[in-house]
Length: 206
Ligand code: 5GP
Image (cartoon, rainbow, N blue to C red):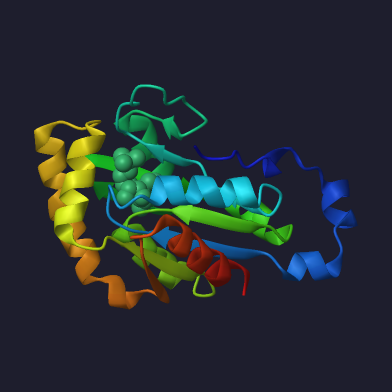
């Protein structure tokens, strides 16, 4: 569902034609929330409404692609050795291990997009969001919470993209994440999609 960051292809000349006001408007938004909370749907709608204003970072992961996912679109699907090599040479803005797999945000496209005045959105888990708070303090961090843990478990089971073992790991992680919601600048409860979307928009564009 992620829109590709095409900033890599923007040349130096284009960079220099971007006005000062645009340059200063670049910002980094971090969206965190437990697996199954509906971040994907919410962010997809956000992108449909603001296709020119928001860029979604494409993360790298060592997990296997799900049905319908493509390398370079939802994620860069790297093996562990490749991921660790890039991590060790400092190529990630942040990275974390989640449910037995590594996930990370490649740093270069983010830096370039921000310097070009874009609003860049990272959809990442808690540990990564904490790292961004340290390494990029001006980032706005938004937490998406479920109406309740029961609703979350039902959503995870209904989606049936993960094994029982994966669901248990994800629920365990979800509890830790919900308990950390107070660390974020804003918490949005995803009960009514339209209301949550409006809250997300005002948090992003204020
Ligand atoms: P999924 O396997 O369901 O696509 O993602 C699992 C979790 O990893 C989600 O909470 C998602 O937000 C998080 N995630 C995805 N990309 C990254 C990343 O680049 N860094 C970190 N720290 N978490 C990520």
